[in-house]
Image (cartoon, rainbow, N blue to C red):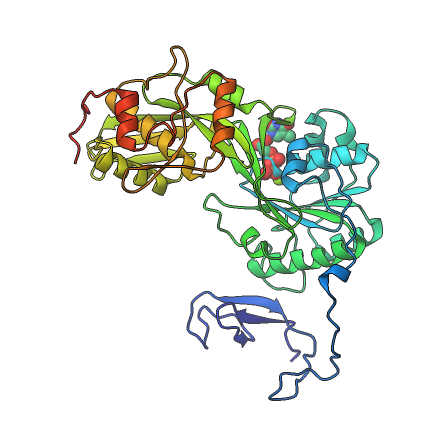
Length: 457
Ligand code: TYD
Ligand code: MG
């Protein structure tokens, strides 16, 4: 019987099995066996020393002597995307764009290729998900006719895609998506860990060999899991995360990893009927929409190195449920739990028998401790039914981190946050500089009326 072309290797202990098993016979872990290509005639090492026969020594070079070509970057024509990439695409780099289905990954990559084509670059769009006709329909919707000049192939076979890249030698290639390409030599289904790793590895090799910049699209489920993008993060040069909610118009792209730039940049987009549009004045929009009602405050957040004003809203209502509901959109649930605990213990507002809903308006996600004060004030203001004190006719702007003992802690870039708020006349800004503790912020901004819902713990 011929030897199978693949083996199954335990990702916990490295034990290899000829066949798949639910449990590793060596270390006893469950669900850790992953299919891999059998290594081609592995050379026997000389026992004891770990030396490989025939492997010559390599001379190390001082870093200062290494010749580093200055990377010439390719502009994608989308300012926000170039910014996140650190100034454009680096030739020969592999960029993974992860995001939930329907968020706009195909739209963004098509738009990038369209402007690269218009600038005279050789590009290729590999679609393993949609037919060429479907891609054409999308391209037609995008503004400008350039998108129709993108060469596409609709192909799911990895070998065919590699051969096409070899032949066409594009400067920029989009592979949509890494989970739907299929390597025939592995028995597992497309999208499995083994397949995704093999596909990305093979594409990486051709991309580096020919200096092709590859944008690899990968799907992420709501909880960020699923075989795929996660197992590739160490392999690629740059990981971009496309976030936002499908039902909302605003989306952000941020770099989680970037070998050629910082990871602090983020781009904001809006999905319109003719594609994604960069949002350059996001703060202006969110501020003008802020309600100024009880339960609403404006947070001076940082999107990367850029300040962004967003409205945080809260609703507090009596609950019959034990435990009561806590719903958070746009902020981390655990962070909300922490803020509520500090609010109860140190802010004099206990919400043990109330449902609490918090929402960052516009589908924006803020994952920074600087949002704590805004969440606390929005909830406190909703609980008391009092709009936060501010300049008449304008919402209250604030930022700051909550410490577990009820103190307000400073966060990064306070001057930039205040400057952004000042642009819209939202001064003074409530911050760790104006209020030392949550208790003083609540007392100063929401008056001293006692909580209507429940006495403090
Ligand atoms: P798509 O880019 O296909 O998402 P992904 O590749 O991440 O799965 O498109 C996302 C959604 O955007 C889709 O539901 C349709 C919508 N859309 C627009 O609203 N306007 C447009 O111009 C385009 C092309 C898509
Ligand atoms: Mg798609």
